[in-house]
Length: 557
Image 1 (spheres, rainbow, N blue to C red):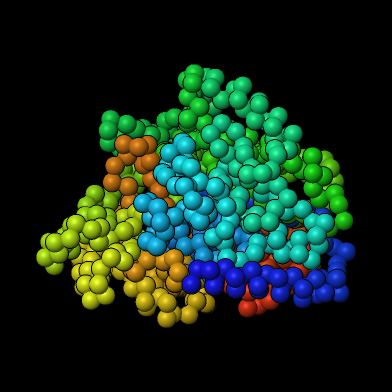
Image 2 (image 1 turned 30 degrees about the horizontal axis):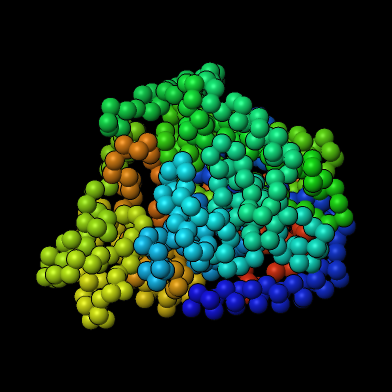
């Protein structure tokens, strides 16, 4: 089924290119921007944006003076980095895009590790993704092969081959899911510098940035100054293992490069690369509309390592504002006509130890036995199954669960039913959704904030990749049992603290307005497409064009 899905997607892309080109040239608009800048701030929830909005002075302040949608939604249940980034520049839900999670299980692949990473190509023999939390992420080839639909940059290039599609991110999945498989330049962080796809040479400006990073990353770094408005957020919070968060200002000792990406410095070098490529590739200075996708990852690493409500995040919000301002300043100095949009791939949840003392007494960490291995052991005992084969597979305690292919159909059905029964009975589980039910369910529509949990799960569901059933945890349950590895908080739930994100548009001359009604991140691509003179067929998109022209006219042509 997977091969058929990919062929279908590619056929649709080719067909789209033929028809869209005529539409584009017939309706070309002199008002089309020369550059589209799409910014994703990893883990920037709508709540976090609202909390710090009053103190922004640079890039985020400018965006707040444009068309502001404070109630944007990553509408799906699997609120993770890869699915979230895929929605932004494709305009389709993760289930249609094929990007159901950061990782999923494919029991049919030949390698021992059945976990598939969203931005790898497991067809390449000898690859193994390994552990996404490790500094070295295993031996794999970063790829957009799993993305089954075109990105906006790819669509624009089909009708205007001279257009440049460029993506930069702190994570390979951020760049690949926003840029797609056909880019003119694409860069992401790897170890101690930025790399690109195999077979491509580094742009000299990126090579120079890498050389500068190499000369400084292992050196000691003084702490950031603590802004006055951050002082009240300085409170040490213990989270087990004798460790705490809440009072760290990102000072680094000599040789501590491993914690570089969990600091505001990480966004600084990512913006350096984006600005360098604007300069070297003359983005926004040609005849066609260029696309620059920038995914900033430091907020996510800081949120995981320190939570979202302490000194660390307070400092990061100020630095994020300044870094985005640097990007805009570079574009302004070149008199480039650009439209910018900013959103996030998902929100985030603070660590439960701080939530408990801040009015959320039910916040807690997950039961360490609530996982595929623990549930499978109970199933084996309850059903009297003697085989030692692994019965259940899952990448995390929540999300997609897969039943072994080595079981006879009748036994597989019994294992699935018993596993679902046990999980439903667990006090930390909100609901279990059967994959068979999701396959029969149409993609949800209507007011996104009113979607039920099954509808949210449906938006993430793909029949070739999703699990036999999906586990959704209760609100305020953090799916990290132990903080020994340095992760204290996370995201990925179907709840609004992970789904709600800001969506902000800015262009010179755009009249400010704020629209509190809900919109979706899948609305971004069709909105930008309309401004670039591209019409995406309605049956190829899940979103809609947002009219951000605050007047009698409309950008939705």
